[in-house]
Length: 311
Image (cartoon, rainbow, N blue to C red):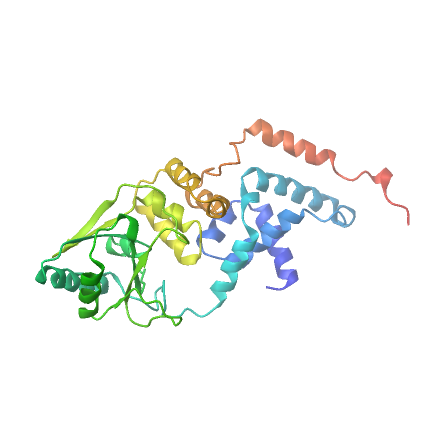
C-alpha cells in the first residue's frame, strides 16, 4: 500500500468508523494499520489551512476513534499481521486451508493412538491446547500439523506415549531445528506458553486415551499473547459457537507473567471488534455526554486565524 493509499484509507475509515469492524473481520490488516497509525499521529495541522472543514471532521473522528477504545490497538502487532498475510501460506505448523490435518485426519490418528495404548494396557489423560481442541469440536476449515499437550495437567507415561505415537506414524516431541513435515505431538510446559489455572473440560475418548482441554476463556487468553491470524480465527470461532465469559478472560490474563500480561491486555482490543462491546481493561464505558464534551473540546482546539504564523 502506497503512502497515498494509506492516507485515503485512513480518512475513509475515520469518517466511517463502523467499517473498522468489517475491516477486522475480513483480515484487511494493511487498512487497519493505516487508520491506527494516522489516528495515533493525529490529523496534520496543515490540513486546517488547506481544508478547514475536513480537518474538523477528522479531528472529531479521531476523538470518537479513541473513545471507542481503538486507540488501544497495538500498531506493531497489526503490522506484523499485515506482513504475514502477504506471505504465501505454507503447510507447516498451524497451517490453514492449504496445509495440516483436518478433523477427520486427527480423529483417525487419535483413534489409532488410543488403540495402541489400550493394547499395552495403558490409560492416559492428555490435556490439549492450541487448535486441535477446536478442530475436534467442529471448527470448519481449520487444520494443523501439531497436537500440543499441556504437561502440567496431563497424566501419561512418556515412554509408553512415545512408542504408541511412533506406531501411528506420528512424531513425538521433536526438538530439531527443522520444521517437521509429518504430524507430531508436542509436549508443552509453562514458559513461552501461558494458560493460567483451570479445571480441564473433557473433549473425547479413544480406547486408552482420554482427551481434555482448558476452558475457552483460558485458551483465548493464551492466544491473545500471540494473536497471529490463525489465533484470531480460533478466537472468532470460540465466541461464535460458545458462551464465553470476557471477565474470566481478563482474570486469567491478570495471572500471567508481566510480559505475557502486557501483550495479552493490549490485544484485548481484538475482542472489542469481535463482540462489538467494550472489553478493554483501561477504557471505561463512555456516556453520550462525555463524547459531546470531547467534541466541543476538539472544536476549541481549532487553529485561530488571528494567530497564523507570519511568513
